[in-house]
Amino acid sequence: MIILIDSHAHIDFDAFDDDRSELFTKMKAQGIEGVLIPGISPLHWKKQLHVANEYECSYAIGVHPWFVGDDVEYDIALLKEECQHQLNNPAFVAIGEAGLDKIRKRNWAQQLNCFEKQIQLAVELEKPLIIHAVKAHNEVIELLQSYRPKFTGVIHGFYGSPQLALRYINLGFKLGIGGLLLNDESKKLHQTVKDIPLENFLIETDSPSMLPKNSDQVRNSPLLLPQIVSKLSKLSAKSVTLISEQLRLNYAQAFECKRFK
Ligand SMILES: [Zn+2]
Image (cartoon, rainbow, N blue to C red; front, side, top):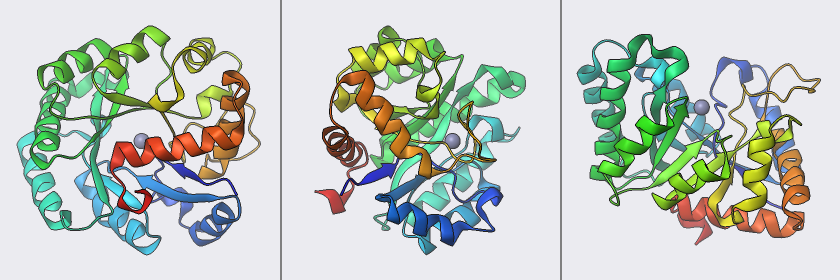
């Protein structure tokens, strides 16, 4: 049976409160064995860690650019404290999601500061970093270059060109691709999947957001993963089995997940 892991799903969000257990049962039945739950803000960590613990999910802790407040130093102090608490838990696999988002640049100076502090923390704790980069690739790459090659991670929700993909890959990063792959208009992303070797990708849904355009669902969920793999299979002309096995290896490599070694 094919085993899939969602490398980025906010399964702790309220959208899943009413049927989270049923969803995990459905996922298991389709071979979706794991979910990595990224962190978004100090206010959300408690519930996130509770859900991760209850459903045996891996998790990252971090401050998402949309949730960066005015007092970055305070949030980073909280982040360091929470990371220290979690350090001995093997399910704590990464820092993030952290990054830069120019669509919501009201707090741009704070975003830059908070992102750099989280890079430094990832270096210090030797954890990979889960990065949210929207319309800010040059700024993200510039910062990553200044800390190269001390750490690695994933550019989540990647939808860029093969050229942009290579810039990140050359810095040691993997690319998380998801539901956008299913949209016919995502030509750049389709080209990236055709041109770039499979070992550079992770799959993700970013649930509950990023619902594909023609979906009849009200929210996105990890149940979308088989469709993403089947689209990858068509674009790269490789079998679903081969792709799933490679993606599993990529996930283990990215997050050094002991159970897959
Ligand atoms: Zn996310």
